[in-house]
Amino acid sequence: MKVDFNHPSLMGNELEYIRQAIENAHISGDGPFTKKCHALLEDQLGIPKALLTTSCTHALEMSAILLDIQPGDEVIFPDFTFVSTVNAFVLRGARPVFLDIRPDTLNLDESRLDAALTPRTKAIVPVHYTGVGCEMDAIMEIAGSRNIPVVEDNAHGLFGRYKGKYLGTFGCMATQSFHETKNFTSGEGGALLINDPVFIERAEIIREKGTNRSRFFRGQVDKYTWMDIGSSYLPSEILAAFLFAQLEQREKIQSHRKQVWEMYHTGLKDWAWAHDVQLPYVPEHCEQPHHMFYMLMPDLDLRQKLIAFLHERGIISVFHYLPLHLSEMGAKFGGRQGDCPVTERVSDQLIRLPFHNALTGSDVELVVENIREFEF
Ligand SMILES: Cc1ncc(COP(=O)(O)O)c(C=O)c1O
Image 1 (tube, rainbow, N blue to C red):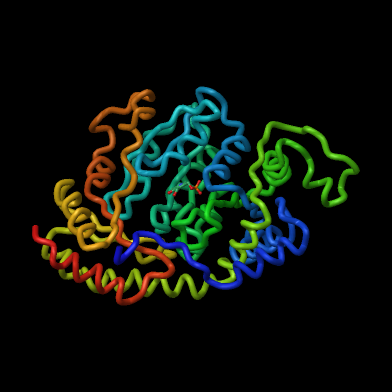
Image 2: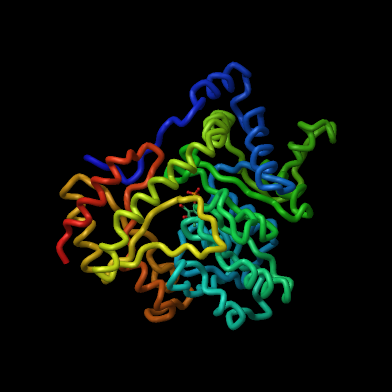
């Protein structure tokens, strides 16, 4: 293999902090490193509460419980997203409403939102694809006018901004992923960002198996007990120690990823133009965190051929989400071919290029050179 699609790496003090966590004799959840991660996220984003979770999937599940989603409630999602965005709400009995995406940013198409609302709509869950912000002004205005809560699935977008404001700080809640493929990782991991303080106390209970153990640890009650439904959504200190070391290096990580993204963009711009290949679009009012680099090939056949062509040369590129309305589960909710034509097309055309924190300039040059040798 010459260039992996993803490759996790040590970016700073990960091993030292794990050693400290063990020496602190506290490797279960909510120890000093978890608190440091919470404080870093809260300070940098300017939000009232961040809670580390075991994954973005679990943060999404917590948000569905916090919003009291009930069987038959409708929740609106972009069709082009990861299964967990939707599954977390379906677990509570929600009926998913799949909205098509914008052909430029591949984010939920806000112009379709109004028509999708019904009296049963209980939440809107936009996804900031690749960390390029959804049109949050329009989404928040429509949601606000009907009092519908917004949960931002910001799995890709930590430290990205829309009109100068951090992604994840618009909705009442937002979710982050620290999965191996993300800019900052603990292998598996996530966070729930809480912007509306009304959710904080219940979120702590849901995250601690439905108990008020967090209040007990803070000395606010003298014993803890079962208060609500919940689960074990908090990560071990070993993971928090690893993650804190990565978050500490956020400037180094983000500037490296920016360089990689720009090298791909500069190296492929004229080639893409000449071959009808679409490169990522970033509106001027969005600052992206350079989470990934994708291209839209003219059709499925060429996309598959390019993936195979690069694979033969030791370069691993991958496709991304399949349209959720056409999945086995999506069909059970009535999804049919043609419902979301932009998602159906983009899903066939999209190819993601190698992108990780250990990628070197010569790796990127090699990928670009090989792509330019691909014959249409
Ligand atoms: C948009 C989106 N939401 C949620 C998830 C789930 O994240 P996790 O693996 O941390 O549960 C992913 C996975 O990459 C994702 O792409």
